[in-house]
Image (cartoon, helix red, strand yellow):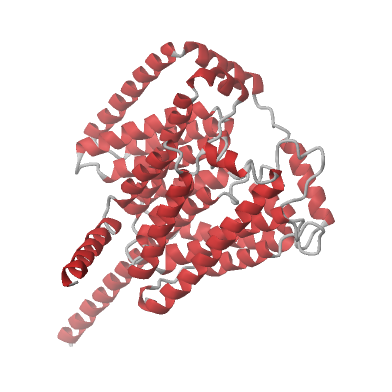
Amino acid sequence: MQSTTLKLKTFKLSFDSILQGKYFSAICACLVVILHSLNLTTVGFGLMMGMMAYCFFTQKDLLPILSILSLLFYVISPGFVGDVDNFDGIIGKYKFFVIVFSLGCVACIVGAIYHYTTHKKSFVKSKLLVPTIALCVCILLSGAFTPYYFSTLNFGIISSLIFVYLPLIFFVYNSTSRLTLDWVAKTVLMVGVVACIQLLLYYLFNIRDINHIIEDKYIRLGWAWHNGIGILIVACIPASFYLAYRHVGSSTMRSFGYIILALAMYCVQLLTLSRSSLMFGSLLVVVMFGMLFLKSNFQVRMQLIVATVVVLLIGVVVGFVFKEQVRIAFDRLLGLGFDDSERFDWWKLAIDVFKKYPIFGVGWEYNQDSWINYQPFFAIHSTPLQFLASTGLVGFLASVWLFVVKCKVFFKNNNFGKWFVLSIVIVFEVIGLIEVLMNAPYFLIIIFIVLAGVELNSTRLSSIDDKVVNDEKGVCKEENDICT
């Protein structure tokens, strides 16, 4: 009996050291890739949710939960979406998601209450807490007093949004005592690497239909379409540049490796054929490259040049091997040009809907027959207009409040390295003007952990500054005492 107890204690200590280790995000990433490639969605969800439950009840620092949450959604495979489609059509599909997100939301809230009562001393105050809760309340009321409010789909979207917003504030800000920008960058980078690997596997597993995929831009990984995949990879690129900057002068090989990885991720996102990702990604890489080039020494500048040449040569070789597919892709992109893809019509519809339901909006299931062909829910390709139409003036003002507070987090105690990490959030905010990003869990998690890392880093710098000022005042007082 004692031997068994000792073994369990030893196993717990070993497992806890892995959970709190600096490589846990990488371990989660490997786990997700394996489960996704083997189409073991149910096993993946059960395993990762089990790890989350274990962290709730055994760990004082919930940092591992952020790694799990950041990568949880990527175990969803294309087969999983097909299985869900068997649930009595569209409505049955969203009934399934309502159950999943609602149970997840309840579990997270119960776990948060338990952790709050157990580890009160670990709490850190966040300026984003109140505006985020206010936005959650407004989302809960979205579509109130309309015929759509009590629909299954409307509550499915509401539950998924609440599931993301509310628990994340607890996980990220109130229970993580050692959240750093380096950890944030590594976690975000792992998300980008997983998305790239999944995209490459998608093309590999569908190599016979590759021309059809490119012509129709039909890329579906289970958790996102082509635009979502491309935007996510683009937003993760600054994390690699940040880590390269952090290793300047300390580890030449690591710095070079992160530069190569950033450029490789940019090349992989081109496979999504997403015009917004291509446009913003190209601009972002040029800016990041220039920032690192200007702030680095001669050795790192040579690394940047060599990395660029290496990636270009590999790109030329790949382009030559798949020259027919490259031609089709260019024809597809040039054929679309700057076509708005009916966005202006969607935006006009959003304004019209807001005029009709100005207070609490119309919710998330409003659809006209002409719009339901490819969009099962009310999404208008603009985050601000989406809040205006779906949550009304009340929700829109709450989202503006949250945006203003986020901007304050941006510009407090800034340093050069922090701008690489902040660029991740900026990418989401800018692309969010022409896409709807704030109802996607895998986007929101990254936004919140980046803001948390920046805010906690700024709080630490402020405490250091205050200590320096107090020390200086103490020195002055001692000098005055001596002088007198």
